[in-house]
Image (tube, rainbow, N blue to C red; front, side):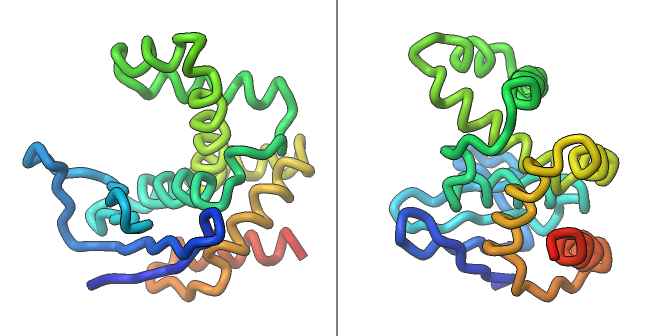
Length: 168
């Protein structure tokens, strides 16, 4: 039920499914959830526009391996790391700051950068002006992953059309 879009992850098909209601295993509502062993992400349709694009950007970055590439400069990644840490709980921040989890923090920061890129038009325009190489890397990856999608929601269509126009 819902929109299904295939992405590539390590040569396997990854499904992203938008569902009406999504609950975590603890009975609480969830924004998104990966189902272990199935290559499937569930995304709540109850998310607002910005939150949905944030989740899509994050999952696309992980699914396509963008989070494992060197697509941004040190200053941009430093900002992404700090911004990502701010939105996490103190317990998660402590875990991510542990030196043995440096690679995890790097991947999450890169995925956060892609998420902010899709979520926030002001940020996206700033990246386009100030860091065109970063903009091109994220836009290219997003368009490869979900560029064939014809969204039902006007804002989703506008974002994809913007990326298509800017990337060409």
